Each structure stands twice: as structure tokens, then as C-alpha cells.
Image 1: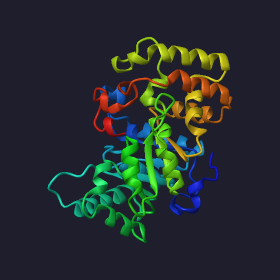
Image 2: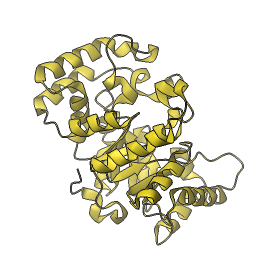
Image 3: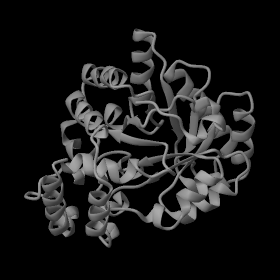
Image 4: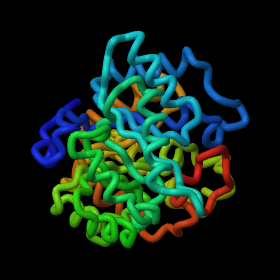
Length: 316
């Protein structure tokens, strides 16, 4: 699943990055619409990690805020003596605290949990924290022979991305991109990030489950998408590709994007995603799907407007 990426020569710590990156919020949190079921058992989390490796996934996306995820990744790596690329994230900084001390302490906790001396990528989870005194300088210093291979930011908006690109040394950008949310593409923000030499990760690619949902029985926050979702299912059926493959193709075809961050609830779901990533979808079908999906309200695709399903759900 690995392919040459624009960023390999620029962000050497992420050389060999696969098209699919496993998102691990589900591995450590009572997360998403299934939050009422609690944190998944450790053996299921390990099974997902093993399946990711078998599917050719070379990178894991995690965060200190994802509950037990970092510890579970570290334990799995030790047990298998297998060490994929890992991108983790700094928790939102609290007001009044020394930001440099907070980053230093959080980074070391993450490294200890992950059982490694250096993390391949380190993202500021709340983009505005990148502007706090000393934060960017500390991250630059750590990425120059320290505990970070490369640093960057997780964003929601084009404005956040453009502000981050002004930070010297920043080389990773993670942003929401999906069939129903092309804001970061249409604004040119991701093209600017790619042109600046950043490795670009797309998250929320399946719109937090909307692309896997049936038309009937949608959660309240998805109801505005029901007519469009029905037409998308019809288009995918007519094209013979399935909506999952169509949703993935709408993002993976973009030259600006290096890897798609996708989480899953079990190994079978991950295998389905990996298989769909390899499904050829005609460009005209993708274009038709994008035209159908364009114009949906942000309340459909932006988790910040949704009910909070579980801890950390609004920042994943």
C-alpha cells in the first residue's frame, strides 16, 4: 500500500508512508456513536493493529488524548517487535500553564507509552496552541535531532492551516477532507501546504461514519444529508463500486494528500476499507459524487457541531 510521496524527501521521518494511516481513537476511548459500549477490549485493539500491519498500513495516528491508545500501541509494538511510523498529538494546552514545560512533559509521557525514543510525527492538536510563546521554538528544537522526527498541526479550517504554514520548520498538516467536505481543497489550503513541502494527512474521510451509514435510521445530526446520501448510494450502485470505495476515491485521488487517516471498530471493518482503497473508481463517477455532495451544511460533516459521543470525539 506504500507509494512514493512528495514529502518523502522533505520529511524523512515519514519515508515509506502508506496511503492509509490507521486512526486509533477507537483503540483507547469510548468513542463515537458506539461510545455507550465503553472502551474496546485490549485483544480487539491488538487484532486491529495486527490487521493494519497485514494490510500494508505503515503509519498509526494517535494522541495523548485518546485514552489508552498510546499504551496499547506501545504494548503491541513490543509484543510483535514491529515498529510502524507513529504520529501523535499534543493535548490542548491549559491557560496559565507554562506551555514549554507542558509540551515537554506530555511528549515524554507519549514516548514512554509508545516505548520509543523518538516519535515520527508530532501534531499540535489545537491549532491555536501553535501561536503560544515558545511552542514553535520548542518543537523546532526537538525536530532537529531531538524526540520528534517532524512536527505539524491538526486543523479544522483553511485559516488555521494558512496560519500554521507561516511557522518555520512545520512540515505536517492534518485536516478534515471527505466527499461531503471539500472545504480544505476548494480553499486551496491543502495545495498551499503541499507546495510548502508538508506531508498532508486527510482525516474524517468517511465523515465520522456517514459514508458507512444506511439511509434509514440516521442519527439526528446526519438527517440533513439523507436525500444526498440516498443519491450517492444510487450512484455507487450504478457504478458498481460501492459508496465506501467512492468516498475513499474522492479523497485519495487528490495529489495534495499523502495519506488518509481512518479509524475502525474492528478488524473486519479495516479489511473492508483496505480492500476499497484498491478499488478503481472512474473519475467521472467521483466528479458526479462531488457535485451531488457539494453544499451540505457544516452541521452534517463537522464534529464540532455534533452531540459529544465520547471523550475526545470533537477533536478527532
